[in-house]
Amino acid sequence: MTIDSTQTGLAYRPELRIQIAQAFFGPTVPQQERIYALKQYFVYFSDEVKSLRTGISKESWQTKDLAIKDCEDLFHVVNVLRTNQEHRRPGIRQRLLSRFGTSNDLAINRSLNLALRSWLMINVQEPTFAGLRHGVTSVEWDDERTLPAFIESLFPPSRWPEISPQSTRLGPHFTAAFMQRVCGLSIEWTTSLHDHLRLDSLRKALKVFPYKCHLQALIDSHRNGSQQQRLPLPVKILQETILSLDLLFPFWDSRTITLLAKEKQDFHEYGPFEATRRLTLLDFDHWRDRLLELHEEIFQSPPVSWAQLWRDRRSPQQFWTFWIAIIILILTSFSTVATIIQAWASLKALDRLT
Image (cartoon, rainbow, N blue to C red; front, side):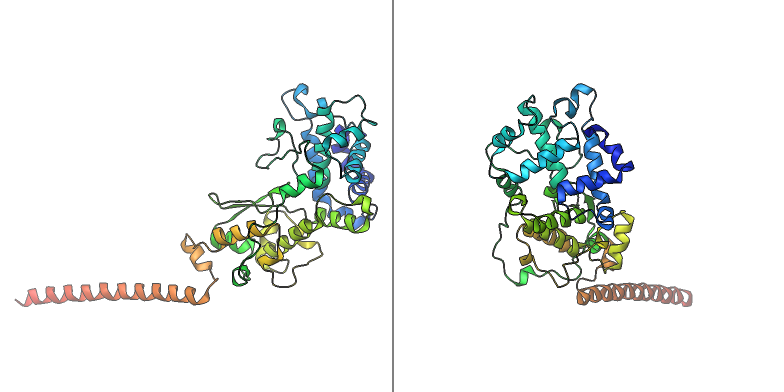
């Protein structure tokens, strides 16, 4: 099957989904429930294949200069990337020439980008096609670094390795549903792991990578694979991403369930559920800075409307102090108005007597 027809094949050939899952995540995946859990991933994969033929003409399509022609080619590229992680990109291209001998560097580079987007869900893309996925940050692998070094640069450790224990605590209200209702936060779903928890402070918009089952499939492939089948993406990043999803979207919270149902997301229904204890920022090495920014810029920001003021229960003492003060102010205002009316009526009565 050609790579162009894969989009249609996914809908009508369940065995193709199994082949893709085995190639990317290992032979332990093809159980019926596991394949079904990856349904959102296959929607993404289908859209990625469709984007190869996006453009005003065939001359502008990515398929014009693409070494990969079918799914077997794609699987081969992923396998070469997986088993040659000590090599830089030119060395990877050299090893692919045995299969794509007539392809130039551009065609092989585009094939490497497609393989990384399909396998790891990181938007590795050349600048020419950077705008194909609106609002998704694109990055490009260069010839100077190995694949693990390139990926490490995308997920640096926290700039704040040492912070006070008190400032690391995350209260029970630190959920996306609460911040949406009380702090005016909006959620934008992203298809690139690199964009996870990226906050636009001006728009109060948070990007969230919701493909939990894809993350778990990569973790399982690492655990079940040999040393030669290891991931170029550190498992710690995958685990932290799942933890952050469990933190912001707790499966036991009714408002979270309502929010995700409205957004047509169901990742919270799939385990494992690792956030069974109260998490702190110290549980996150790679996502700590973005979570800290979310906590300071959004969670700790004051409500901006009367509705948000009423919903805000972060500090019960402040909540009741504020609203009791409002009630006292209203009653005082009524009392003042009543006193003025009474004085006015007394003056009118005095005028009649005189």
